[in-house]
Picture (tube, rainbow over the protein chains, first blue to last red):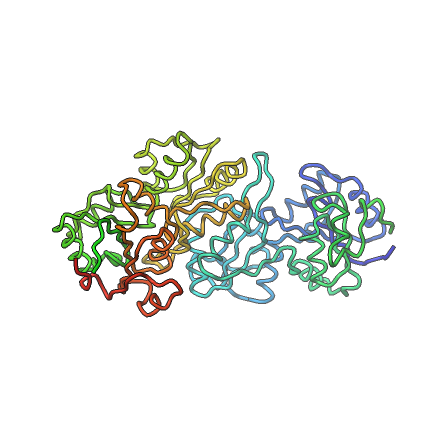
Length: 254
Length: 254
């Protein structure tokens, strides 16, 4: 099987399912590390920080450097730093977005913003959404961490960041740039940081519409794992199928 | 000019503009009243109660019986009473929606609802929208007072109820029944209550896409007034134009 230099793994459905680790993936990561390769983790989840994810992985017995965890809020902050240096941001979100902006030393404001950045926020309210609408109407660049319309909870499916983003996009008529998968910005941020060739990168995930699509759009090879959202039989029938499809990562030799 | 028995007047842009009365309409209402005709008022605004609107009209020198003011929240409550008697409602909204449900003696609940009703709510938050999503996913009928995506304020355009409704509709995949104009439910509620013939009703308004469309969809004649949103030259060029178009209601003899 092909050897890559940069392995990008989705988290939920690929490394773990909710609060349970997927053992074949944990073993795969260990095999990579024994070869001296530290994989990257690519998640649309914008609510948690890199450190919080690193701790979650540690609780599954997986050691991962915090800076190898690419969340959609980290990618958003890097996107702002790269394309809009020195611009001021009005943000909606929690720890994940707040820490990401801090880590890139981006100034946070509550009015007269150059950029509006939306991520999931359980403390969202009318005032925050109204401010986002006013700032976007005044010309602020509109970014959103991801398109996710719903996420699971103990009570059932909760509205996701993509659903709240529609308040602002429908009211203002301005569509945001979405940072998360299926867009390619997170993979691009990894490549930009380490300066590798696309031929040496691979995106691995369970969800065709987000993980595999992100890889396809960025132009890297992809491995679909049959451990989450998209059944393998559906993934391989797509017009542009994943480069490879495996039941789980115990089938991937390195 | 044709004599009707039931005159339905839009409010904002037709009777008043923000905090200023449109004098030709105030005079028109007085001429109707001198002939013994008490007009109806039809507004998508779901935030204020009938009494609050009656007081606002009174401050403009217009006397209007509160029960002649058909707001989208009153129409929603009447719609629930008529089509879903004895059903329990989870509501998002303020005084307007709350009082409307009370006036129709509809039971309000915070979980296990048969119906979810959304109206504009400046105290909206994650929890309210999450509950709406959960209840709609469990099968509750989904109603929304109106499609309005934005409304003017001193600060600029604020997100309207139609924008917040998209959180729930996009997250659950369930489209609501909208009660307000351009839907016909408010005009139907007036007809149902007084039992008149459609031939004797007319809908008067400044906004082609809401007021005139509501009249067309309900199948009554319409009068467009050139005092608000849609310029007369645009209104008369529509595929289905209003029945009549006047500069203002001083040109309408009765």
